[in-house]
Each structure stands twice: as C-alpha cells, then as structure tokens.
Length: 154
Image (cartoon, rainbow, N blue to C red):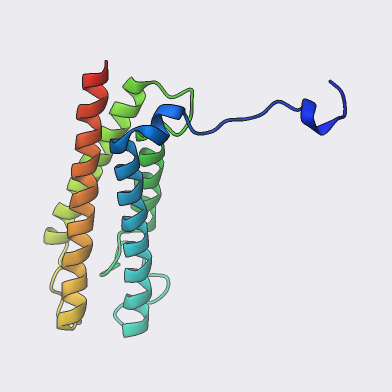
C-alpha cells in the first residue's frame, strides 16, 4: 500500500438502503427527538429541583428515561435502520422489534413507577411527562412500522 492518502480504502458506514428508506429515516428522526426530549427533561428536572444531576437520568428520574434505557434504544435504532452494511434485514427487524418492546416497557413504566403525576411536579412538568411518554410511544410505533417494512421486503 502506498503512503499516498488517496490509496487508503474508503469506509462507508451507512448502507444505501438505510438512507433512502422512509421508515429508516423516520425512525432515526424519531429517536433523535426522543433523545432530545430525554435530555431536556433531565435538565428541567434538575433546574426545577425535582431531581439532582445524579438522579435525572437514573432510576429516580421523573422527566427522562434512565440513561441505560436511552443508550439501549439508540443502539437498537442504529441496528434497526441498517446503519452498517453488514447488518442483515433479519437483524434490523429483530432490533426494531426489541426497540418497539423497549418503548412499550418505557411507556408502561411511566404509569406504574409512581413518577407520573408525582406530587413534586408542577402542572407544566406533569405535562412534560405526558409529552415524553407520547414521544416514546411514537418511536415505538415507528419501530413497529420498520419491522413491517423489513419483513415485507424479504
């Protein structure tokens, strides 16, 4: 291999189908919105005094999903949209199924973990909780739609 920079192999990360497929784009955009909603929610929780910095994205979070859940959802999204060439449609569909289930669990936990409508929250912060659950549910639906697209493609 020569030392000339143009002789280095090029690395393509995004598969062409992932960038053109509307279901993949919508899911990626939806996950971006969910991550932003979680980040804003954590900052709101800290600034309003209902969570500390160490609680804002942990099990005691009131206005955001716990960080491990967010990271898991992002990783599943990356696989589900086919961001890497070596990811088969079967793996992408599996990741999309897991993402849809993770979103369902996240929404359900919002109703059963005691955080929804917590007495420390103002009406505006409680409304933000509902907004977070709606965005999470939307990402779950986008993930389910991605499964349908991938299964029909095969």
